[in-house]
Image (cartoon, rainbow, N blue to C red):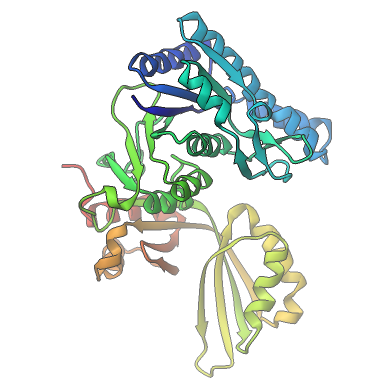
Amino acid sequence: MARIVMKFGGTSVGDIERIKNVARRVKSEVDAGNEVAVVVSAMAGTTNQLVAWCREADLVHDAREYDTVVASGEQVTVGLLSIALQAIGVHARSWLGWQIPIRTDDAHGRARIEAIEGGELIARMGRGEVPVVAGFQGVSPTGRITTLGRGGSDTSAVALAAALKADRCDIYTDVDGVYTTDPRIVAKARKLDKITFEEMLEMASLGAKVLQTRSVEMAMKHGVRVQVRSTFSDAPGTLVVDEDEIMEQKLVSGIAYSRDEAKITLVRVPDHPGIAAHVFGPLAKAGVNVDMIVQNVSEDGRATDLTFTVGKADMERALKVLDEARAEIGCERVDSDPNVAKVSAIGVGMRSHAGIASQMFDALARKGINIMVISTSEIKISVLVAEEYTELAVRALHAEYGLDAA
């Protein structure tokens, strides 16, 4: 017998028929003798509608009341799923975040989980009850409803699995696992049986939409084994596990990409100590996250071109901040380009093998793809290319590293 947390996203509970399908899946685990807790998101499209209503009521709304409104989507889903489970003979009960309680900080709209008191749920599961828990929400130190931000239901599920000391957390979605790259771009992309926490974290942060980054961080921190599965298929999914569980590591496990990038270049910045602080300090204060950075010093050593990337949605805000600080920075001009994409090769096998980067650069050069910026970490290499070459670059690298399915 295992203790399992099953999490179902918005598309999985998009209507009553799909909720009944989820109920049947939960019952099959219960019938197999497992202790089961379920975490659900709001029905597909519900949260967007609730957010829109808040903005329509007042663009500058109270974040505490915003959380009260948007958390209601999950309240509907847990009630409906509990009814569907009871209808097929499963002893189920709905739980909202404040009832467990799932304790968070008071950062409304983007709260972080601080503690979950799992004792009551563990006792009830031991008596055969299935708790159906609202994802995405918790309760603040002052007793107000909080929400965790988009994708927060994944985080709720992993945190609950840690609190319940579950053997596994199954994330059910509309894909049947984690692939070596986006199957919509590369027809020969393969589903991975297993992937390490670190690789999944890089893939999630670099554009893969399968799991939310915070949920992977939490799973890695607490050692929660996560399985990504399809709600609409019985095929086995992908296990996200500790590196020790994977016997033989491929050099590269996957190729990720993100079109949500913009490139900014400060031309002929004076090359002296402290100039980077004058550039990136104001950006940080404005909440602009900077990613890839490259600096080219001029021949005379007195000026440099400083290039970096930001999220496409942050480009205009970044340009405004830089314009206001331009006199202090002393650059000749500021150039921007929103038509770029980041393409990344990821794999824990990179730690112990040389030549992965040169292989990437050779493969892109053969396709005539120019590299604008390069960044690396222990298990990933990312390059910035013109957006029009995104799919060509992904296909070339997927083939280059031997990831194409036979």
